[in-house]
Length: 87
Image (cartoon, rainbow, N blue to C red):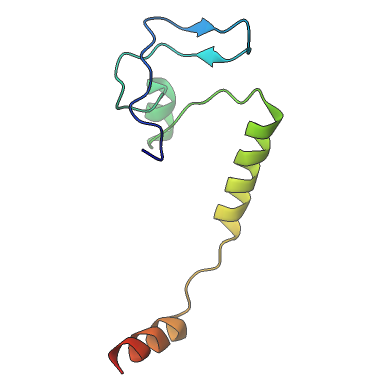
């Protein structure tokens, strides 16, 4: 799976001394790591991940930048595509 499901199960929150990675307590392999207080307060879906590595931080900055700057699909582009398909 592209989203790396199923996730590994962790009976308690642990720190991997070798890599410095934090493995949050996780009892369900098919659910993202989330914080119920944050989800309740923000009233939205959350996915909590610890970003300790430079590459992780750069990846999320790129993702957010691409997401907020994506151009919406123009109506005339949709009509041109539909006409091309129907012709």
